[in-house]
Length: 356
Image (cartoon, rainbow, N blue to C red):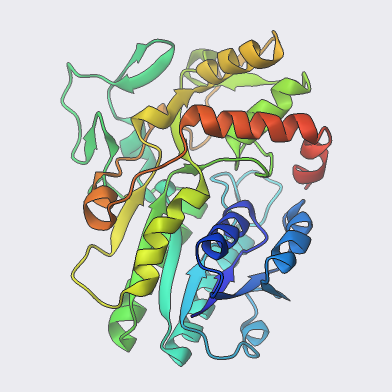
């Protein structure tokens, strides 16, 4: 089987590629990346050593895909994954749409040409910002969680956010571009008769993740805390009680293997993947974990709201369990320890990976 994996030099893409080959060395993986992300070049050597054929190309340019020979599947893991992208004054709104939507369209045209299956690595950020912000929450053990004494919106439970939760805008340019990509992927698959799977992933985390607060919060926080770099709780009274779950991208691979082996079935096309409540924590809890590991470090408080932030976003992956018999393998403690050990071994990681 020959697979084209876009964004392969990113954290998610490289982790998926290595894990797929660890499980099945007979796979032929062709990786495409424009290497625009600081630190992504560090993944070139290990991927080549694992047998991956790398193409330095840009998904926004259809001509960069013309030389790709017959493929069986495409895994689209390329994206600008920041909810602040295009609106923070440092990045282009047009480039966000070009990267996250037009690039996917070019890959879908490639899938159409080769009649290849298509898997989109999507995001929890396709869910409505306003609806997420309106979820009634309460504080328990220094973290937000849904308020059991209030009526919860459709798609919300103590298990997390389910697939039927609102996707009404505003989402962020990132979220809207990914939601549009989901819709187009399903339309292409139906119109041109190739299988499509949409995997909506929550926060991905693990060793080697690039450290930026807007893209890899667990990696950024642990690396910054270890270096005694300035940190602050932003918004929500500056208490750090906003809560997220996480899982390691290699844990996605068992589901990917089943998806790659199947064609069109009646299984749900859109499924959530996340760490769930067991793999969730607040920033304040993460700071406490860091303090126990590295010693004390003062975290500043800034109550001013941060654009697109929400108090509680935990993914409900029960449909993934039902559909693909999937659940995350790595515990939260395992993931945090992995990041910490990598941070201790790479003292310049923030400098390498967080540069603009």
